[in-house]
Length: 95
Image (cartoon, rainbow, N blue to C red; front, side, top):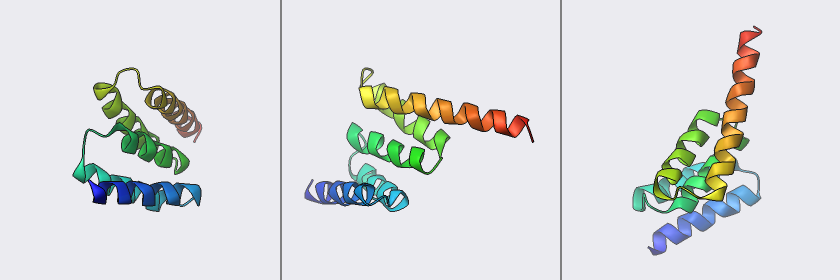
């Protein structure tokens, strides 16, 4: 549990510095230790949104909502992911 907290805090520090790829990697390491902790999924979803990885962000939010169907961060970030996917789809149609 101590390692989990350390990795999560390191991920949070990377987010504060705008290092989203590194933060996502730390959160992924956390998930190997505990797949039920929703905050690391919503945090990684935030990183994916910042990296324009909308499908990955949506998947993380879907996972959280299977565990906690009223998780506000997951609902909001999934909506942002859907929005990003729609914009990408429209841009691809114009090519």
